[in-house]
Structure formats: structure tokens, C-alpha cells
Image (cartoon, rainbow, N blue to C red):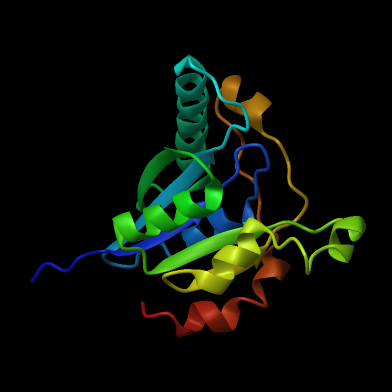
Amino acid sequence: MDRTPDHVLVPLEIERFAAEPLAVLNRLEGRPNLAVTLLHVVNLSVVTSENRLYHELAESARRALETISRDHLSPSLDVRVKIRLGKPLPEIRAEVREVNACLIILPVFPVPRWRRLFAAFTPTVAEKLARNAPCPVFVLRAGSPSNHRDRWTCGPAEPVPADPRSWERFRPIMASSPA
């Protein structure tokens, strides 16, 4: 009996790379019927009549996500790479509906002190998505963001080691998931 795969969506910002969601995905290795989509949304604040810029950014993001998948994720995972154009929140929601995702793993970075003052008035994309997502959202606090774009264009990246101590707080969540 074939079963539709459980689908996990991981929105990633290419400019601010977080290794923590990849470590979570590697822990899910071996789950039957699990598919993973790495999503990047190209969001330009300028209007251009020439689509070449969008295509170049999308192709660059696709190569980066494929490199991340190849270098940081287990080969036994069924990983798909998706690039969407537009505003992040509606595009993430559209992708969730399109792939019928059962979980979103959402990395969030530390918020600067000045930003916390205005947090009640200007919620982030992550906060908006976590409040009104069409499926459960696993919000994962990421360490400081790092830009690995220079390594993606110069060849394969070295695996980013995950600190085993950081897994202690997720052990109950991972233990409760079906094997």
C-alpha cells in the first residue's frame, strides 16, 4: 500500500544560512515516506521590466540550495529544492498548500535589542507564519547567521558541525515523533 509522503518544508534565507534545521533533518533520516523541500523566496523591492535579474537570482539560489542539500544533508533523504518569486510570507504559505506539508521547520535568528522595542508593532515573517500557518511550525532558534555564499561559488562546502549539546532541548520532540 503506497502512502503519500509526509512533507517537511524548510524555508531558508540564502543570505543568512542556518545549520540547525539541517541537523534536525538529518536526525529524521530513515523515516519512511518522508520528503523534504528546501525553499528560498527571491524577494526584490525594485520593479524591473527585465526578468533577467529575477532569473539570475533564482538560478543562483537554486545552485546554493542544491549545494546545501548535497553537502549538509544525508543522501538517503528525499530532498527537493524550490525557488519562488515574491513576498516571503504568501509564498511560503502557497508552497505549504502546494506540497501539502505536514510540518514547517523555521529557523529564527537572534533579534537585535533595538528591534525588540518595536516587536509588538512590527511582527517578523516568522512570527506571522507561526501564528497563522496551515500546518504545525517547529520554530528553531538558530545561532548567528553566516553567509556561506563565497563557499558555494568556490566549490563544495565543508559540513557545518552541529553542537551535540544543542540537541538536549529537542530530544523530547524527536523522541515523540514516530520512527
